[in-house]
Amino acid sequence: MKEQKKPELLIPIRNISGLEACKDYADAVYFSLDKLNMRFRTKEIILENLCETVSEIHKRNLKAYLTVNSVVHDKDLINVEKILKCAKKSKIDAVIVWDPAIIRKAAELKIPFHISTQANISNTESAKFYHDIGAERLILARELSLLEIKDIKNNTDVEIETFVHGAMCVSISGRCYLSSYLYDESANCGACIQPCRKSWTLTDNENNEVVCDGKYLLSAKDMCMIKHIPELIDAGIDSFKIEGRLRDSRYINVVSKCYREAIDSAMSGTFTETKVENWLKQLKKVYNRSFSEGFYFGTPTSSGFNYENSDNMSEEIRTYIGKVIKYYRKPKACIIKIETGNIENGDNILVEGKTTYLMQNVKSLMQNENEIKTASKGMLIGMKMDNAVRDNDAVYKITKRTEDMIKKRRC
Image (cartoon, rainbow, N blue to C red):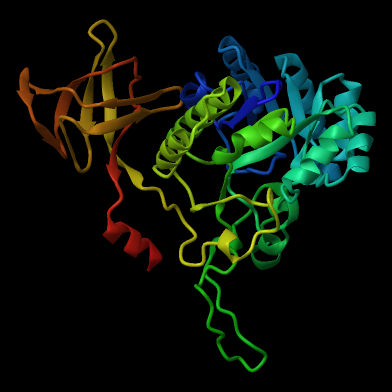
C-alpha cells in the first residue's frame, strides 16, 4: 500500500460515558447540545456544561467537534450567538455547520468550522466554494461513490470527511420532510419521528394491496465499510466518521475499537480477511439494522433495505439488572441492588452512568460475607469491580438474543 496520511477516527458521543467508551480508540469525538442540531433528543451535554465537556475530551488527548447543523430561523439567532460564543470560550476544535448565518458568525468569532453533510456537497465546485469561504473540512454527501469522493479530494485542497458506519437515511443527505408532513415534527430541526422505520402498506389506485418483499418499505440498512478501509485510506479521505449519537455506549465502544484496529492494520500492512471476519462478528453483536455499503460502489438496490425488520438486529442485547448502591474505592468493590432478573458467576455485565463505562465478567458474588453463585431480584450483593464505578450507576447483563426475541420484534 502506498504511503498515506493516517485518517482520523471520529466517534459520536452523547455524554462522558460515551467518551469513556471510546477514549482508547478515537482521535476525535463529535457531539451536540440540546438545541440546534439534528439529534434533538441528546440532552446531556448543554450550554452550561459545554466548557467542562470539552475540557474532559481534551484531557484524553482527543479533538472535540460541536454540531450546530439544524435549520435555523430568525428566532434561533440569539441561541446561535450564545452557543458559538460559549464554544469559542470552551476552546472547541471546530463546529460542524452548514447554514450561512452560522458560518458567518463562526468566521466572525474565528472558530474553525466544518461543513455538515446537510449541505449535500456532491461536486468539486461546491467543495471549492466552501473552502474559499474558510471551511477547514467538508463532510461530503453520503450519496457519493468512492470514485466521486476521490475526484473531489484530488481536485481540491481541503480536508474530506465521510461516514463509514451507522444509520443511513432514506432521504438525500438527511433532508427529509416526511416526519414533518405526517407528525409535524421536523427532521431538519432534529426531531425526526422516523416514519421510514415504520411498517407501510403499498396500494394501487383501486385500493388493492400490492404484495411486496416485506412491510418496512423505506428502512435502509446501516452502513458498514470496515472491509473496505484500505480502499478508503487510498482515496485520501482525511476523517472516517461513525454515525450514532443516540446509540448506547457499548455500541460506541465496540464500533470504535473495531475501526481503530482496522485503520491501524491497513496502515501497517497487516489487514486480512480473517481480521475482517472477526470485526464483522463483533459489530453484529451491537446495535445494527443489518449492513450495506451505502453509495460507495453504486446506488443501493433492494439489497440496501431491510424489508422484514426496521429495528435493532444485534446478536446480543443488554438487560437492566439493577444499580450500584455503594462503591468502595480501596477494595474496588461495590454493593449492587438486583431490581429485576438475575446474574451469576461468569455473566458478562455492563456498568454505565453519566460518566461511567465498564464492561467485565462477574468473578464473584457475595451476600452477608458468604459467596453465592446466583443473585436474583430483591437481593443486595457485593461484587469486585475491575475499575471504579459510581453510586447509582446502572448495571446491565449482556446476553445473546434468542430466536424468540427476533420473532417477537418482527411481529
